Length: 563
Image 1 (cartoon, rainbow, N blue to C red):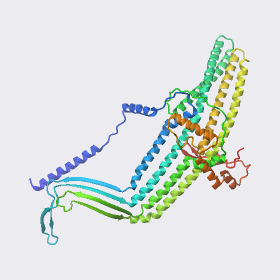
Image 2 (cartoon, rainbow, N blue to C red):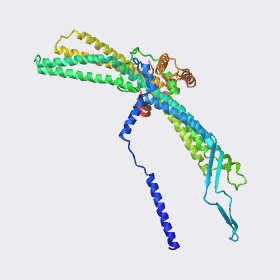
Image 3 (tube, rainbow, N blue to C red):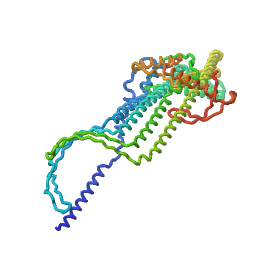
Image 4 (cartoon, one colour):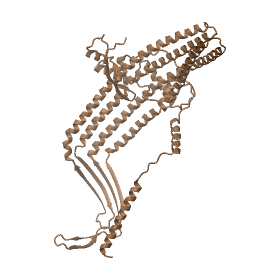
């Protein structure tokens, strides 16, 4: 076999080996989608159910409004998520701080080879070997290095990053405040729905029982031909319509406790009782102008937007700093076991400066982009302030409307009860009077339901005013997180709000704003040129709905004068 054929055979084997290695690598790196098995799904369901409801304090007594709020704040999954997000931001802040520290690198290694690392040299002038082959390296050697480096540019960028992350921590706390306010507001409305449903359920069941009995009596009367078939069918139709309305009402009443249980993170089938609450009329100790002023400094959404605006400025500064030259300082200690070395250990230090000269040409563009982002942040914050002012005004108007509606429905319910009492002894025991009596009883139940719903709406509108103004339902410091302590703290804070005794910080901000800017309504009047008697026209404003802001048409209440 010639040398040429051997070379070709070697190349063929080499190509085959390389192709085989590539094919093996591609096969090994391929990933086949693996769906979750049914057993894994069951395991996840069991684990999630335990995590959702574990370590909850047992219910030992009828639940009051404050306890319902406390359980929701402590166990609601949305609140848990907001708290975990804040903790995550805290941890990220700790990690971000390490970016400002010098880089410390340590390395060690060991090398070995099967022959000497020998070499020779060739004369450039003559082309002949000028030195016998020699080596300056052991066949086996070990090394170790420890170096410290510090890049001034990286330190500056890390500093701005840490400042931005600190703002993210504060923004996360504001989001948590917003979540707590939303939860407590939802619990307030759901609780009054549920407690009134609990009080009304016995009456609904009793009225349904009478309706079922009247329907059976009507069927017997029809079978005995005591009245005409047409009249009998009309009576049965009326009774079935009333029974349908009562059964629908009964279902709504049962669902109201399930909704409240979901907010408290109780299993839906949990049986619990609600404590009776006072239904005394609620009084607002604040004027609309005070609430507007307080909302400007206390609303968590506005404060969160302010922290985001801070980060926009920091982002611009960080981008501009990246255009500067980077200076890197380093110092290190090294060791190598090579026996041919004169110095097996040594130290070194130095400085290195680098700069991308082309980055200087992007300075004006980077600065323009940063200024544009800052202006957008300012406009976004101003739009949010407008939305907050609108929310405060709408919450105020809705409360007044809900209060008037409750007064009307309460009066109608009282009149309907009087009609029922008067009609109870007036009708004789016959089919016609029985149907009429059931009809009046059904109307009385429905009137009570309308009254209770109006009362729940009024309570919800009352809480919405404090939420719109950014007045926290929880104090800043709590002794512990037990349901009892949280309930007491919520009750104490609510008592202070009802007495008009807001926090010192909120009071100071209100005084400062009024002193610097004057009353917000006064500002409106100074810039207003529209006659007082002119009918307000609808206009588009940014209105917060849930977790987003959207444009909606509302009535401009700028010049509304509270009677």
